Structure formats: structure tokens, C-alpha cells
Image (tube, rainbow over all chains, first blue to last red; front, side):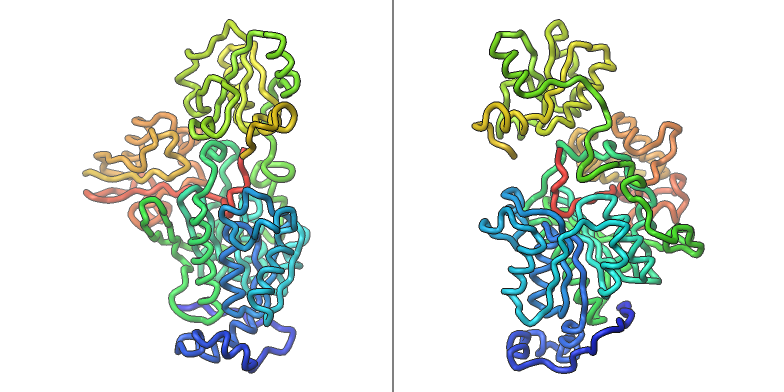
Length: 394
Length: 97
């Protein structure tokens, strides 16, 4: 059964298409499942995309192309070179521009008949309800747990569908939350994982095509919601494994005691989601562990004067191949069983890409009784910035 | 009864990079116990210190959430698949360390 959308009040809905639009949307118009009625529903629909990155790219492109009349794009980030491997909205000339604005330009060129608004802002508990209220459907293409809970809660408070997609390396998940009769994100994940427990560092990265596939599934579900057609993913979690090229489906149930969408709601307003997820500050928070550090410049001068240092690289072998400081490689996950490889008679300097994994390694090794150990502050990235720019950053 | 436990990508690093493992088990709990015995590092990712399944770990028997069955006491039958469904948050894989 296709869920029905709440009618939105406001501007008068469009009741006709121009000749240019009829030509543009002709492959929709000749399908009985869309037709003129469906195309007008698309034209009158208002969809807010949270994130214009990997998932947001196919979402924006397909929803704009399909003629969704009003698209909002929320992103505070700036396009960088590492985005171009998968964020196909952007071109090389967009590097350095705000993503929401670069996406707005690209989508306006794709379809000048639609209204596109760029919101160059970080979604927060203070602005989410205000941003969401003028849209029919919210599409979650963010990349962190606090924002996912925020999007969920704001959608439930406002009674708006939340088209969910998430990716990790070569696996994806998609479903539709926020329909009154269906479950919400908190029904599936009542609590976020504590920071640091779910591996994110060494296991990071994503196959470039994966967000294209999962974001396209979200775009399809969004269009089905607008048309009121087909069987939506409400109550079903679609799992996609790109390596095995397998789709699986799990049942999602509405939790009657869910604090957000259950019979007795106990969360009646937006909360501090960084606190809820156990993280503070902006972006990927710095590690909680405080360990003794050495700066790249200090390390360089100590190596230059011939200090006998044992350089421990705790990244993964495939990262070592990209660039290295000629250290001894023991991936963080293997450290507990490979401690014997360390020469504790020498002073150890541990490093990783950014300094976070190696801080965990230093903390672990200090607890294991190794005292003469320092963490390279800022990792190989800082080494590249401050000491040797010939070392590539990744 | 032989059941297959599917190991999600984020946890494979603690399971010898395996994507699944087979166990002889009469309940979901027995299969998970087999898994965390074979791969001891997985234990802290799935269970709290007092031995309860962590709230953010979703375990499914075939396509059904064990929270709506008999939790870890849910009986298994030959050929069943148990899936551990992790929370993943990525949208564009910006958050690296």
C-alpha cells in the first residue's frame, strides 16, 4: 500500500504544464503510472535533501530531472577533490565552492523549470523544524549519527516522511521512516553506537558507485511517495551488498514503546544530538584519549639529528602503499596480538593518517606498560603540510 | 542445527575478515555465543560488560528482528540465517580519521 502524503498549505498548486515541460517529461507522461496527473504531483512536490554529497548527488540529479517542483539542498560543506570520485553533481571546476550552491547551479542547468533553494548551513536542533516545515518529504543523505537522529526526530515531530539511505564501504541500507503507521529510525536503532566502538577509521572509504545506487533507490522511493504509487519501503529495510551484488530485505516493525513514534512519546522536542551520540564538537570529533604527542617538525628535527626512534605506523596495508614514513606497519586492529614486534627499548613514535587511530594505539600501549611512546600530532596529513609536501594526502 | 551467521562489514575486521560463519546452535543466543567464542574480539562489540546484547546491535533471524521473537532464546532450525545489522551512518564517507 502506498502511503499518502499530508497536503501542504501555501502557494496554489500548478494545474498544467507548459509545452516545453510536456516535451521534457514525455517519457513520464506516456506512462499510465505517472501521466499528467502524476507529473503535476511531481511539479507540486517539495523535497528537502539533507546533504548534497554521495547520496545527495543522484538524489538531486534524478529528482530535478523528474520535475520535482521545489528542491531544497542543505549542506554547509565545500567541494574538495576527494569528493569527485563519487559526488557526480560536481565537476573539477566546482572544487572550493559551497556544495549546496554548486549543486543548485548544476540542477538549475538540468531543469530550469523547477525552484531550487540552497541552504548553506549545518542542520541543527535550532533550525531543523523551521527548515523542514515547508517541505513534504525529507531525504536523509547525511554522513553522521547525530544528524541522522536529528532528521528522524524532526520528521516525526512534524509528521513528514524521511527517506533514509546509508552506506559503508560496499554495503548500503535504505528504507522509508516517518510514515505514521510505519517505524522510525529509533525503532530500528534505539541508541547510537558509542564513538570509537564501531570501526570507522581503517574501515573507512566507499566504492564510488555505491552512493549512486543507494541514492538512486532513495530518489525512486521519494518519487513513489509523491505519486502514491507502488509498494514503498515503509516497514522494510533494504540491504545491499555491492561486492556480492545481493539485495536482502528485513522486516522493520514499529516499536510500540519507541520514545519518539510509540504510543507514549517521551521526546517532545529536539535535543542535543551530539551529546546523545556521545560526541562533542564539530565534524568527526577528536579522540577522547589524551596522550603525549610530538609535532611533525619536532619529529623531523629529531630524526635529522639521528635520534634512535622506532616509527610505528598503525594504518592498514593498503594505506601504507599510498604513502608512508618508512615505519613499522602494524594495523591498529592487530596491535594487541603483535605487541611483541615493538622494540620497547627504543622510543616509539606512532602515527596514522590524521593522528586519531595512533592516539588510540599510544593509549593502548601505555596501558600495556610501554612508557616511551609519542603520538605524531596530525598524522601523515600534518607531516605532508608541515615537513614534506611530496608525501601525498588522501 | 546448522545456522549461518552473517557478519556485517564494520565488524569483519574482528572476525578474521570473514563475511559469515556457520555454527551448530539450537537458539540465536547459542549461535552468537559460538561466534564470539571463535572471534573473541567481537564480544565487546556485540555485548555489554554484563553480557547483554548492545542496544544498537540489531540481530535478525532470517528477516525478523529477534526483539519481536524470543530475543536470544529464539529457537533456530537447520538452514536459518542470523544477521547482525550494524548502525551505519555514511552518506558520502567524509568522516575519516
